[in-house]
Length: 180
Image (cartoon, rainbow, N blue to C red; front, side):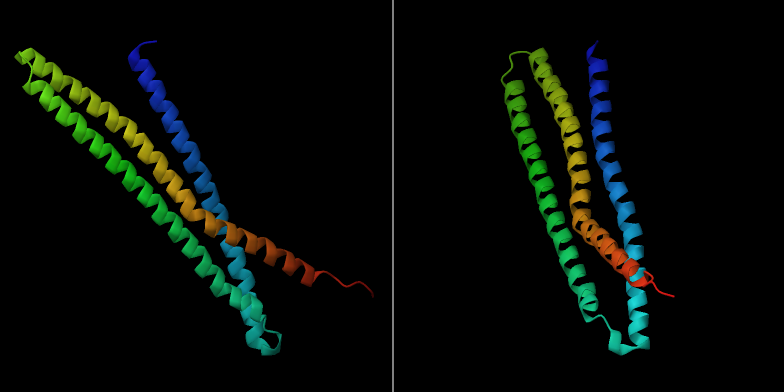
């Protein structure tokens, strides 16, 4: 296998990793959307029942409507900020490395005894820069996919838990009591 095939296989592998992680996030987003519809439906029914008869108002459920959103979106925002700082640190590390390698290449080219030596130093720097940029682009792609998953996870877990809880609750209320 030649170097070109190895590079292509590496890119295909990286693309598969990013695609797989993104697919998981999209599936969770789909689950979140479906579960939120169920939760909204249950809670609208509670609101309509409370409007018709305030004596049966489920105050605990109404309190949860606000507190869960605040907790979920706060956790999502914290995850997002942490992920963005991680990406920023990665980019700064790459940029500082590039600046260091460029300085080394300039010194090498300037102290070369021949124009060919200077051209070789420049060529090595360009090839190295391309390889670093390519590797870094996959790293950033993975971090961005991870970031979307981290931002979604707190919301997904809350809404799917609520859909299960409210669904069970709705089923127990509609069960027949038996008798004639």
